[in-house]
Amino acid sequence: MSLRLYDTRTRTVRPLEPVRSGHVGVYVCGPTVQAAPHVGHLRSAVALDVLHRWLLTRGESVTFVRNVTDVDDKIIHDAAHNDEPWWALSNRMTRAFDDAYDAVQVLRPTIDPRVTGHLPQIIALIERIIERGHAYASGGDVYLAVRSAPDYGVLSNQSLDALQASDKAVPHGHTGEKRDLLDFALWKGAKEGEPSWPSPWGPGRPGWHIECSAMAVEYLGEEFDVHAGGLDLVFPHHENEVAQSTCAGHPFARLWLHHGLVNAGGGEKMSKSLGNSITVADALTTTRPQVLRYGLGAAHYRSSMEWSAQVAAEAEAAYGRIETFVRNASEATAGVEPGEPKASWDEFAAALDDDLGVPQALAVVHSGVRAGNALLAAGELPALAATLAVVRRMLSVLALDPVEQWPGSTRELTPVVDGLVALAVEARAQARTRKDWAQADAIRDRLTAAGIVLEDTADGVRWRIQ
RNA sequence: GGCCGGGUGGCCGAGUGGCUUAGGCAAGGGCCUGCAAAGCCCUGUACGCGGGUUCGAUUCCCGCCCCGGCCUCCA
Image 1 (cartoon, rainbow, N blue to C red):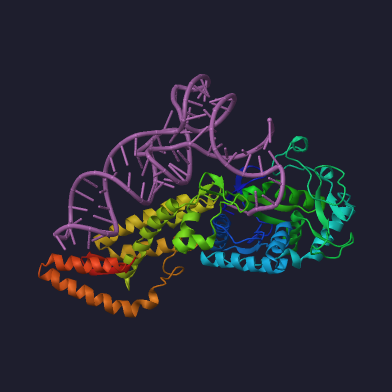
Image 2 (cartoon, helix red, strand yellow):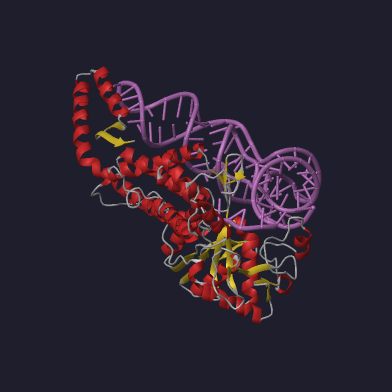
């Protein structure tokens, strides 16, 4: 395939070569549904949505799996604190995440499996690992014997001895006895008052890492194309997934894709536990969803980025320029037969093929917009119509097309507003004919105050709602 | 301490061993306009510091400084 992606394991950009030609299987580590989604979660979804949409645009058949971790220590803890059942909290938050994804036009995954729906697969996988001699039961828990795993550390480039020596490698909450400090839990024996499921090792629940290995194999097979997630998941989560799957005899993911994180204020990672997160709901009170999408998606997926009022304002300005062009060009070219475009789809495609180079792709979009604006000013309508079509096709891949994907919410008001604005525009036109500039400007100022912007063009007055 | 990523013009943010040195925002000048708005054209200031390799480095190598991520739950 012409698409090349950065692979964390080999630390190189390499071509995506699917297991089955014409089909791409992608597994994304989705959220732990413990609290409301923040802007960082959305950046993750938007970045991977571009991958999803680009694969579809390229004509691939895509199985896109994004899991939901709906039971874990924090969910149990927080639910108890709220005095609500753990499943009520996780279900409520799952819906909040879905709402956030929908708000910025993230395509729905082919399937979004939950941990609690996959206990049989998880238990079977653990049994398989035990049979192959890489895991052991101890005091109601099951642990993976890390030193028995071939090549542990290949993904994150960690050496076992370095990990062992790290003063951060402190064992934590478990009831059983580990044979080695680095061993991690595949199965956690139930504690008093915690949710549990029956298993060959007694009641308990899955460890964090095993769920992803089990669900990925369930929906994508023992070997699949892309496993994606945030940079903060490389170690230990993804490293442990590799270990589990290798120990189970599965080839697992061919390519590991990791996206950068969103920083809040002081250059620090946005996260719930640091208390510096901006929820999606909050961001949407001051930023339009399409602008949020533009802002979060504009930086390259692997770089870290800030989210702040200033970033939002710049995204508004940049995206507004695109919207203005699409609107003006659409009005001017209604019914015009397209000619030769002054925008290059091939350049756009090449940018995305090169490790999803959205910044370069957006540069191509903006070049198209500038060329289109010039054509509009020159009245070269056939070329403009063609250019508009290409620009919109590019925007559509990024889920930023103002017409198809983001039809104005004010559209339904149009019949009413149209009539009222027309009245004011006519009155102003009469004043202008009289050269009564004071009166004309007063009318315009009042419209501006009401959020309606006028533009005098060669073809008459154009107005829009700000 | 170990592993990883980064430091680019006023700001955000790409990229490259030399070519007209992305793109957006902001600034200045011009065109258009009664004035605006929208738009077009032009302009300026760059590649953390010190070495090295090279005909030539912002781009490769080494060292240093600074920032961030991971080594504990995390998109």
